[in-house]
Structure formats: structure tokens, C-alpha cells
Length: 529
Image (cartoon, rainbow, N blue to C red; front, top):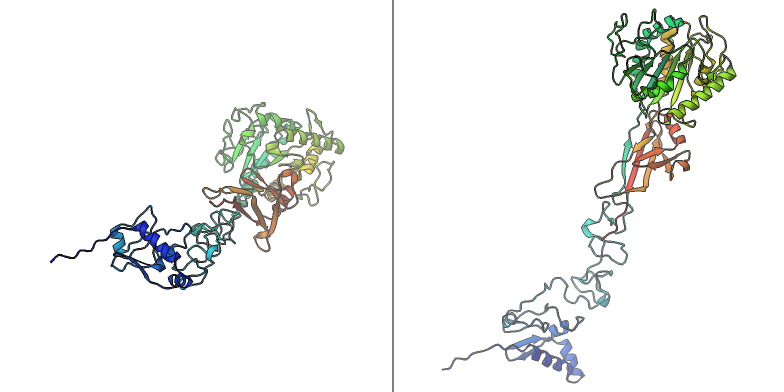
């Protein structure tokens, strides 16, 4: 008996044409039944459900992308495909598809909210719309920019990127970075100018006896970063009226000044001696030459001048010790108040012009001038004269001249004045100067801005400064200004990579050694994508 054989024939375009004809032909009742019933169109051994056709006809180009809603029956049922990718006989018989049917739920896009759908706006579905193409809601963090979102970078949303967790552009790509600035007290450089004239034997001995115990050690205990520079001739105080300084301040061992070494011994970083004869009235005129080195020191230990030992960021304190007045170069105080004041103003201008980096400007001097001179005693006699006290023209018992020029310079710069004659009270004198040096220490008014995180750029407009008085209580905000010329009483400006407080804000800080300063900054925003 002949075997019966069933063959499967590929009729892709023909089936399509017949199917379209069946749907299009017939009366209204026929069309209605074709669209509402789930039957089969069978040609030979091929069969298709009309539901599959209905689904495919909803695509924008009239063809499906390969996904079907029906399943293969195992008897050769198949779904339509694009003519450029015909279904092979094997595919037709197994019902394999080229797209995961779970991506878009069945019925998604028909405008009806079906099971498994979070939304369905029909033709208005879209990945940039409220309802996405797969009938899920467009929410912040899904990576699709919805109609009420400015950006959406999915899992990359957050404070460190271009798009925030709320799908808005981050004003800062690194959030707000803040740190507590270290309140730094400026170092102090103290320059002694000591008269080597023949009448100064007792006074120089008083200096040597007190400069360690009642001066350097007091400053050292305060924690200040200080150094001492001596400008006076090195050697024995008697009979030569020269100066020798021992340890711990200098490098000469304790007791070593009974028979001084042939030349000074430095204590690097703490003590330097520029050996140079200072006459009774010439102290001021020794400063410019010894500063630059044109007046050479006796042992060539300070080639280039004492400026090499000064620190630009330090506050300078001059201490002149002399029993006479000022008569040298363009300066002559004539032992009078008027001439002393005019001479002091002239020297001040010359010193500021010599090195503004070291000594400052008329608006902000960075030096103070103290005088130990032959003025009459105060009451009590160990009490120093303050800057607000007048110039004293009368002399102490062993004085030669009251030093009105020195006194005027102390008043101008806020320094102290002490009578010279009672060397037994030099402990109090040196303690008083040490206390003045400590109290006059200035707080640094510039603070570094740390580098922003890698790959980010600092936003200058995002820098802010808060000052908390005494380190507690309510913080005060300092306001950013464009530059120093635009400074306000509570302002700051950016200079390179530093925050610099305006002068009045800086002055406020000087009265508060326990101040807390917090600097915050942001980074420039990143354009998402």
C-alpha cells in the first residue's frame, strides 16, 4: 500500500494576500466576525490565527518585528513575518520568535489598562512620555527622561554626577565640600639694635643677663614660632661695649660669653647675629645697609644681609636699646617732640619702601618698634609707656638724650617704651616686651582651598566662609567679593587657590585666637550626557 506523505510548503506572500482578502471581503457581519473571533485560516498544512493578524496590523509599518501572540500548535501554525526575513519551514513548525514577548505586554498600546500594565496611553506611549512604550510609568532613575524630568542617568543619578537623585541638573558636581580651616598664628621675627657706644656697658650687661631667661624663654613657652636677629658688635660687654649671647638662644654654650668666642655662633632657625658697630645715634641708619648686606658684618657670616633670615609672613618687632637720640643721614630728632615725630614718619616711609613684603604698607604695617631709651621713669617706674602716652622729653638719671625720635616711632607703630637707666629692672622690661610680642601675634587671614575631587572643577562662585566666634555659638557668614578693591567689613575674596579675608574681617579675627573658620566649596555642574 502506498504510504501517505504530508509535505509542508512555504507560501508566505500568498498566505498574506489570501488573509488580507478574507479580512477585506464579505459583508459587515463577515468583517465583524473576522475581527472578533479567534479562528484559523488554513491552506494546505499551514494555519494562522486571525488574532495574530490583528496584532501585527497595529505596528507602524504594517509588519511585525517578529513577535507573535499565538503559540505554535505543532501542526504547522505560524505567524507573519517581514518579507525580508521569511520564516523557514522549521521555524514555522516550531513557532520560534525573534523577540522576547515579555518586553511589551499583550495589548500594550491599545489605550486600555490591562493586567500587567502600569499605564497605557495608547498612541501617546513613549519613552519620553508619562507612560513608556512597554506600558510602565516613566519614573526618575529609570534612565529615560520623562516629561517632568530635566535629566535621568539611571543608576548614575546622585550628588556626584551631572543629574541629581531628583532628576534635576546638579548645581554642583561634587555636592558641598567643607573643611575647618586651621587658624594659624603668624611667626615673629625680633630684631635687636643695640648701641655700642662707651656709655652702654651696664645696659649691655643687662641685656645679656635677661635676653634668655626673661625674654626668649617666655616667648618660647607661649608656643610662638619666633627667631631673634641681633644687630650689634659681637664681643665682651666690658670693656668693649660689645654683645655676646649664650645658649639656649644662641649656639654659644652657657657661660661661654665670659671669654667670648672670636665670632658669633648661630642657632639656625632661632638666633642670628649680624655683627656691626652701632653708634649712639646711628641705629636707624644701620638698618637699610645691614638688611641688604651693603654694610657687611664683621665676620662675613651674613653675606646678602639679614633679610635672608627674615620670613615674609612674619610680624617684625624691632627693639632699640640706646641712651641717646637719633642723628644720622636725613634724620635728626633734636631731642624735640616735633622733630622726633617728623623723623619717625620719614624713617617709617623709608622702611616700608625698603621691603613692603617684610614691613608692610602704611595701611597695614607688619612691624612694631619698641624703645628702651633714656626717658624719665613712669609711675611706677617699671611700668611701660603705652602708644597713647605722650612723648617724654625728660631723662632718666644716666641718660644722654630722651630719644624723641625712637619714642615717636614706637607711638606710630604701636610699640612699648621703657626707661633705660635701671638695669636691675630689665627682667620686667624684657618680660613686658615678650608679652607684647605674644599679644601682638597675628592670625593668618588666608586659607587654602583644597583640590576638588578628581575630574571636577572648582566653582569659584560656590566658595563660602563661616566664622564662629570663640569656636562656639552662632556662626557668621562672610560674603564673597570679586577682589580686594571691593572688600566689605565681612567679606573675603579668592586669590589663586586661597581664600583671603578682607582687612576688617581679618582685624576681627585678630581679637579671637579661638576662632573657628569653616570653608565650603562646590564644583562646576556637569551637563548630563
